[in-house]
Length: 430
Image (cartoon, rainbow, N blue to C red):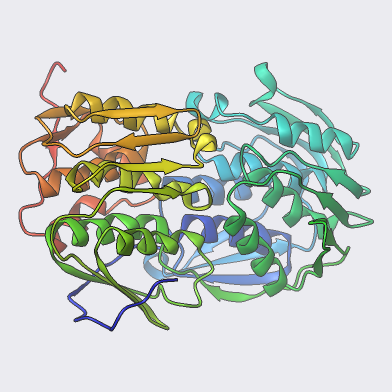
């Protein structure tokens, strides 16, 4: 990771906890024997949906004062009984919870919003069928998904992880609860940092995992142990305040994100350094300082940090030369087709933009006043909010509240950090 001589700290940004960490920790705590404490969890639509889905499955999650921590009383194995967990818009709930439920005993019907029903589940369904799980998927091999659980024997399995790493993470976290454990061959793998995060957290809860030279992951059977663990600030959410500092010539520090972070998305600051910002990553905090107009004229592969590619694409018109982002084909299968959504919105701003199956190129330009189509996707709204900060009175959002999925206080925090930040809702009737 790129570091420079430590600059002034500027304002400290209040970035909420990591969604990826929070929902993984909830799952592992639910599977552990005893009560685990998850400190500083993200409290947002996705994590609350995950928490409530666990509660429906008979695993209570009790919040401390002001949700400063959550106590999770685990089962020491998979859940039992009959339940209808509602996943809302949370892809992690739809991918992590079915394998966990299948290791238990009972009947579990998973469902979610129309948006979540449209997201692919086939690789997970194929993997669970290969493990002998009795299930009935919905139309197109998606939600609603009925699991008739009677435990999983385990063994060996090949998983298609070319679309999303969440399938693999869900299977890995359930693997210690399988009678024989699990050896998984992955083949093509996107978002490797998220798998590294999953494995690190599994080990924190006592799992034994080995990776062979050919990439096979072997998880031994055995119980998870209850753990007390804190959640880092969300590195994906931090990308917006870091980018805002870069384009406004400000200095912003995010405490709690440092060299020991489990989140690959902190590598977004390396991209900002390439674009001309001054970056310092220390043991306990990361600081970004803007130095003027962004530098462009480069191509960057953001496949492993794809949740932040939109942040770069949204501010790329401010660079002095085109920027090409590659490796993001799987971003077309998220809450929206994110590559197409960014390209369409940038073109609506009058910015020359081209895209292909796994890439997007954004040219320099002066954005014209535009209503951004958020498509109920929090990252579209937050990314274009940064562009609107840099070029005032141009960007309006048709759904500014969709940020609640992962960063409910986003607009308030941006106002606190950056003078002149304003949210322009779409005019009535648009």
